[in-house]
Length: 238
Image (cartoon, rainbow, N blue to C red; front, side, top):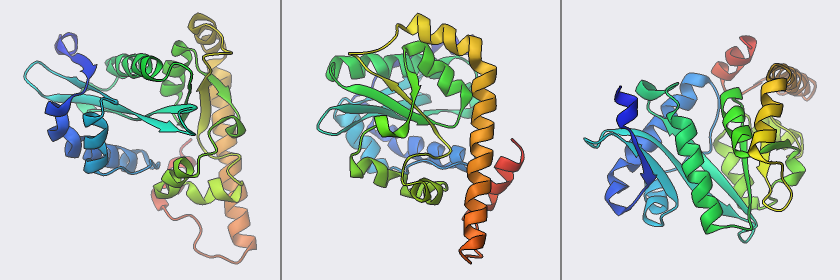
């Protein structure tokens, strides 16, 4: 199988030419889902590659398959494994889990004392995170680094985030604490046992937040509503 030939490794300077491909796929994927991501430029991605803070998946012939990178916040107290993206051709092949495992291991190696966190709207990513030992947490347990939250400005949900004083949004926050954490087998088993509840919770949470925000916009007299029509249709289909 083609998937068996995929190489997942730490990116190096010879991979810089993939930077534009990565950012283009990030943007098109977000548009297709009707969700938002913190936009990154090809130059930013190239810098992460040069710094040895990225993982890439490729075929032996050099064809790009997937990518993820490390961001460091709060004076190395927090690490985020950001920008996970897989080429549409290779999605649902299990390669995303391999990329996440590799970037997680790299993060633990580079920053052994840091808490590793992520924000996601996808149940599949929640499952991968649970397999690594992440647990769902409140936003208050994440970094308070202003630069990190500024990165959310390009997300279509940013107005909701700020309306909730950065205490809640469409994403679910997950955290791995190297000092105080359950073993991956425990968090994975818990997720498997409660996956339907997690899915239902996420849908209810997103529905309530969307309804609350739209009501708030109406009451405040702002007729613009949400910025993205695609986001509105996305949540109608939940």
